[in-house]
Image 1 (cartoon, helix red, strand yellow):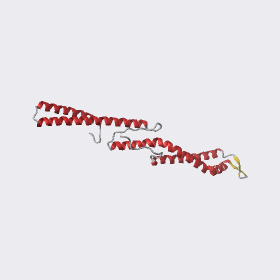
Image 2 (cartoon, one colour):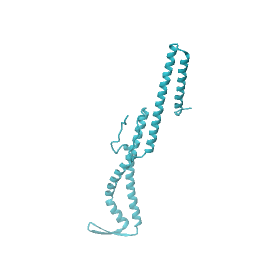
Image 3 (cartoon, helix red, strand yellow):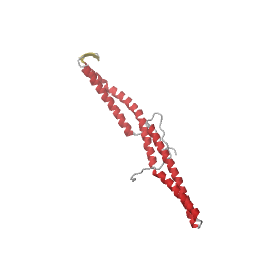
Image 4 (tube, one colour):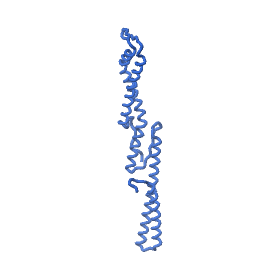
Length: 201
C-alpha cells in the first residue's frame, strides 16, 4: 500500500513553523536593537558631523547614530525580516516535514496498517528515528504474519481432531493432531510473550 499523504508545500505544520519564524524575527529585531545600543555606548565620548539634506549637523555620536539608525531601521527590519522568514521557512521545513510524516505513520499504525515505510528526503532531519520506526514496523509485520500462520495451523489441527472424533477414527491420529496443535499454540504463546503490554503483571 502506498502512502496517502504527501508534502505539497513548505507550510506543513503551520503552528510549529510559525512559532519558529516569529522567534527568529524577534531575535533579529532584538539583535539589531542591542547592536545599536552597544555601538552607541562604545562611542559615547565622541562627536560626529553629519551632512544631511544640505545641512551640516554636529552632535554626540550616540545621539547622531541613534537618529540615523532609527530613520533607516524600518528598511533593515523589513528586508531582514523577509530574509529571516524565507530562511526559517526552509530550515523549519527540514524538521516539520519529518514530524508530519511520523505523525501520519503512527496514525496508520493505530489503525492497524503496517504496510508502509517512512522515506525522508536527503536533507531532512530525523533519519535515525525514521529508520527505527521502519525496523519496528518490519518486526511487528513479521511477528503478526507468523502468528497468523500458527493460528491457522492450530485451527486446522483442531478441526482435523474434531473430524476424527466425529468419524470415530483411531484415537492415535486424533491425539497426534491435538499434540501438534498444542505445540503450535506454545510457539504462538512464545511470540506473544515477547511483548509487554499495559497492565501486564
